[in-house]
Length: 431
Image (cartoon, rainbow, N blue to C red; front, side, top):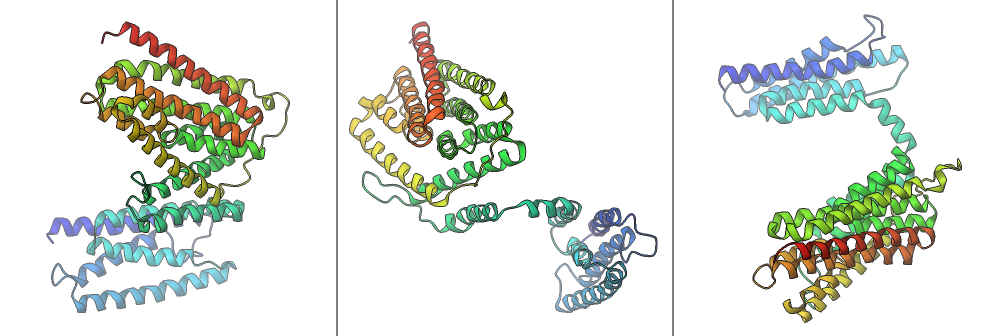
């Protein structure tokens, strides 16, 4: 290690201590001088001390020797003993019981040492994360106090589904007609649960109106069908105003139209002049319907309290819907294979009932070998239309009532507007 690098790493060790010390000093800024065991200066020196000790430990070479490791360990134990004694006396004097400052000081020393021994980016990022955790302590405590058992369990289940179960789920097709990939099924379940959980959090933080719309818009980037399913469940349970939930479905549907345009633009830009106008008009109508639904929501005029979602998501209901969708996708694939390229429009319409993204990708790959641009456009928009009809079916079967009627009107207007625009486009654009 040359002199410039050594100096920069030691400076980083000092900076880490100074950063964490500033937070600790701000936290105890009202404490009288001489009553704090560790403040800005102590933490800054602790980081520098860790860096200097690590520099001495590896002075014999770039690699840390056995003797250097022992020296570093002994120095850390000595530092830990001294700082623990002083902070213990401070806690006794103040009548508090907390290990935060002690752990923070030990981590500062070790990050200072790691600045000399490891990746400086990891050391710097860890210091920022440590200061961030310390500065939001009060907010974290308040958040934990407000956290319900159902919220905690749902969050834990979602994390387990993503980081424990997903890596071990097999990624191969199982079943007839090309089968279904179990990993794809599980990803569908994760998407459904994530959309539902995001909607719950958004409503809890932002309120019914803004929360539902934000959750729907972001959920539409992933799966507008998942948004429709979750909204239908909420409507059936009476957890929010039907028109607000319907506005969310309309907004997610509009986002899905834009998403199809993005896929077409990425895979087959030559189709944009034919497909984009109808999709843009449909998206605009969906957005307008969402705004009108919010305007005419009865709860905005009679002073009734806004509803709140009662639970983040139901695990088994999410799994059930994911399995059902996978089976339907397999059936759709069979029908599509039976039709072949000659019946691409009918096949696309069938696929669109279940997965509009896969349908769009499949259709664009058939151009120009098997489909001309016009036929491909008809196929893509047929799939988009049937996918929109799926949202009406979900709303009718699960949500029912005012919610289902509103979703049917919104989706119907979008399909009608898109269809008229498509006919006009085909009439004016030359083959």
